[in-house]
Length: 217
Image (cartoon, rainbow, N blue to C red):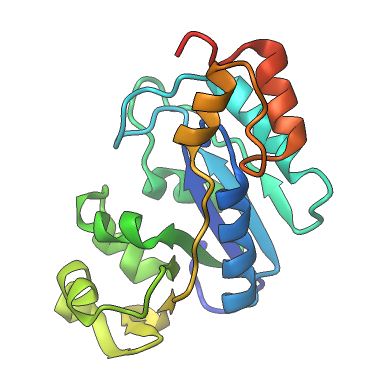
């Protein structure tokens, strides 16, 4: 399993990336600092299960991701094959990574809002038992939220910095994280035919405008 003890510390940042924006990059930086990550993989979902189908195609979303990460030596986009018409689940993507020798101590990078939905994720208990987590939030760790999300049998200890999980894994709660960039704002600007200043890397905006990816929105 990719979350086993030992080995290099790896970050897993999954998402739709429709399109990638500066908030995603800020999440990677914050998680990198908090957990001492040596590598961060940005893993787009071909068929996200938790939202409406993306407006841009998977190849276009991956291409924009590659442009956004160019020049970041420790960050890389990773294409996990689409398994037919099954929705994309993190547990399946992580299993594929392990099968293809992406080995190390894996850290799932989430925003606090996504963390709150964790009990709805496919096999979420397996995720908690097999991987470390880095949760990025505006405020300090709300004990009530962690208690609601984390099953009591899987929590060894809880403190202001997060929680010690069964299997020797840890959930790090990183407070003070905020980003003004959102995919909704980026798409709105691109739909109007203008670059979303300060919201996404220039190369991403230029690609989307040139391909008119969101003009129909």
